[in-house]
Figure (cartoon, rainbow, N blue to C red):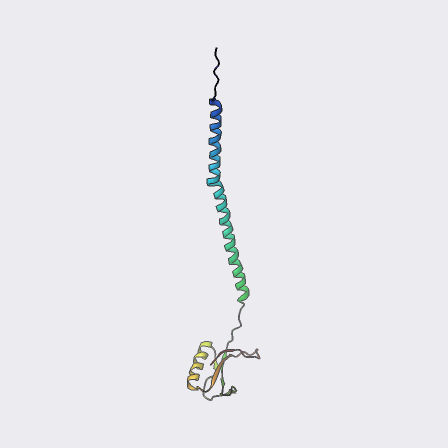
Length: 136
């Protein structure tokens, strides 16, 4: 009998085809879903950490900067004459409990007495040096 030489073997082809299909499925799955999902999750978590860290840094900086202020309980309007010396005008109110009321009175005094200057200062018992808040 005459032996036929086969150039193409179906068994080898079928095994190769199955391997290529399986491998291509793995590659497609790996590059289309697995790697992107891992990277997205990593960068999402990294973004959350960066945002939360920056919020914490700004909160700590704010807490360190925003120390409790010792606000004065009383305010005083000081009158200065043309030469810059402290003087006294009879009949005007000079002691106030709130900043806004003292500022309002000081503006009215400036309109009434244009040649005088006025300073709004804090009046604290323990403090030797007075702090000028406004000067007109």
